Image 1: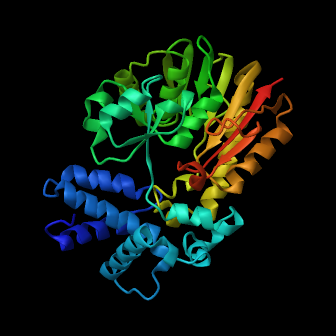
Image 2: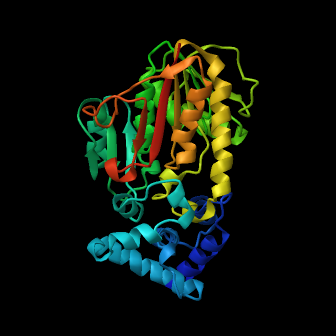
Image 3: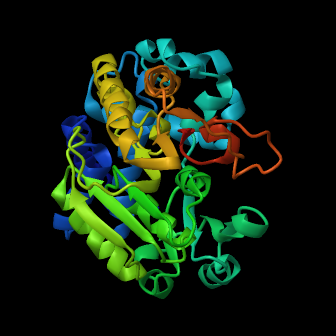
Length: 380
């Protein structure tokens, strides 16, 4: 549905597009704008968001467009055509235009990946254990991902604001991407164990770890940003998660505790290239220098947390990135230096019939979640 004043929506979209940068992602700018713009109806906001994300998704096709209005309108037309007639786009055309040229040295851009990056992202929910069918029936417009343990993974296809639902406020589900949920299942923490979520952020994976531990045992949660830990505190209170301890840690060699852990999850800061379907502005604001710098940070984080593991303890490395410098290169560097660790094979939790491996790459076009890389080791 188009807003009453399309020009006003386009003007807002142009402002967001112009201000977006690596330190100011488009989704954060949209949230900030919508909080202060009482004149925008829900339809207006949807139109603005669609225009902004369409612009960044189809920016590689903007040849010969001189002004911002023309650019956004062309991107909206391309998005509509791709949604209705995806077969009219040639594979080679998509592969060439979907990402900046420098990324081809860091990742394999297949036609399947290119098409997934140009598609609208799916919205995934994680229900409380055993509550998947109940949540799906209450919310409606849902698809349960799979049988057994996978029945608590839900794709939501409706249009409701899920944050306003009674089920969300009662802690029956969390909004969590499918691939992010896979990381928790790979960690497989057990009740009464002691874990460390070293880069906990706002706590999405910590909530899942606690659920898997049946809220028993202890999880240390650390992050360099205190404001993220404050948001984590609010999220854990709503979800009734109490078996954690939050502490500030800057990622350095001086660890926040002398505790020895059964498991450590390093969900490291990264380029976020695995989320470029959901956050397409990142394609154009991330640079090769960013990836190189982040790769060194990731290597250092693994080296610093390694001594905190008990003998036999699990070290899980995860990044929502598809860049070689942040995935296989980091894992190889750790294995060359980490003499006390050996690769730990695990099953793909989203495909129980696949062979076990010590590394896993989840592609956006395979299961419909973010791109994710996971590697696991065991301390000897």
